[in-house]
Length: 280
Image 1 (cartoon, rainbow, N blue to C red):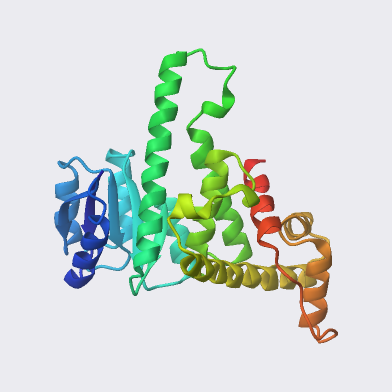
Image 2 (cartoon, rainbow, N blue to C red):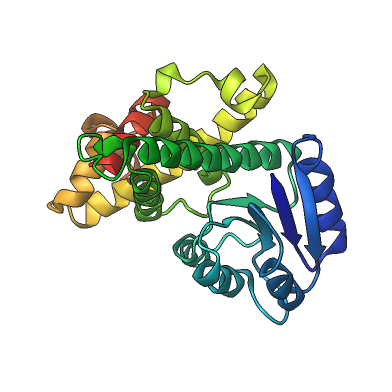
């Protein structure tokens, strides 16, 4: 697949290019430290995936993504940033990016996210081919609608924003894992992490630690919401589906100083509940 990299730090651009081109199938067809030059070049080049920095002079990454999405809606964007402001990240997702990569650059994170976006493109291409074979009258096959995947992924992002964890380091991992579950229609326990993410046991442990920290932060945030408005049905449903009422209750007691321990997080319950809510 063809990549284009935009970052005003030339060192970051070179590092990303080396990581991307480790896979012989990938080719970086262009790089730029100037977003305005990149905008002009991307109008002409055949590119599948764009890696773009969030904060740049002349034109920020969000504005660049918005401009390109209007004329090239098929492009996929991965945003790079050391900023973890949740509102900025939410704006970036709304503009059309797929994932964030945090600075300083982590090789494992870049490989994983790039592979997920590539797989997403391949999945969309397969769905389009199937739809073409079935013809326009594919009403009997609602699950083949490629919009279903993008809509569901956007719902996942909205839920993470509601939990207040889009700026957490583990949020990209959560999006990666949930995307696999959505595309393959499987539960958390059936994910083959070795195959899907090419992780060894140490790398898997690191990712799970990041994910657990992010999920725990979401539990704390939603427990606080429950304290403030215990009758809010949306908050209660989200809390119960993702964490379980007993765990949220324990977390509330811990926050109030009435218990020495808080609630526990279950990766299986969280991810299965997250995907279920996103599919509804």
